[in-house]
Amino acid sequence: MKKFAKLFGKSLLALALGIIAVVGLGIAGLLSYYGKFIGTTAVTQSVQVSLEESGWKQCTGSPPECELTFIVEGVAGDTITQNVYLKNEAQVNANIELQTECPEGFPNKNEVSPGQQVECKTNDGKLGLTVTYSLKDTGGNEVNPGDNGVYTLSKDNSPYTLTIDYTFAINAAPGNYQITTTVVPV
Image 1 (cartoon, rainbow, N blue to C red):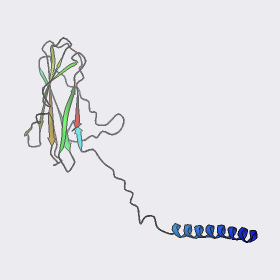
Image 2 (image 1 turned 180 degrees about the vertical axis):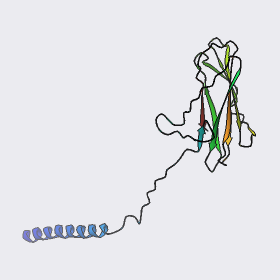
Image 3 (image 1 turned 90 degrees about the vertical axis):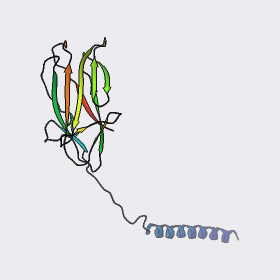
């Protein structure tokens, strides 16, 4: 009887292992999916900037190609003007905000009119510089920001002219002042 139980136990184990092997091979032959799509998309920046109405720049590279610099000269008390250009290449409108960094010497910023005028003042509160923005579409029509200072660039891919006026106080010290305007998506 012991012999029979020993033999029967071994064959039962062998039978179980055989069934597991057959089931395993059967499952391995089934598909776990029918297909796979792996896509790569190359995306370009929607709002681009330029110092002219050509040579449009995107924020790529190091330093970013969209950091454009210019030098304008003038006399304290006068308004010094620089035009720069923006365009929206997306198929939807783009909302932007203009952020101003005041130069050293006039570190205190006061938003007089959001998106349109910023005052840069000295540490003791004296006005040193006023930066004024004016955005116009291709037809020369003024584009006004909303109450929150946000401008909308239409989806027609036409260039906009952003006029930046720098008006220094009549008693501004001679020197070079770096004022940064950043175009920010909203």
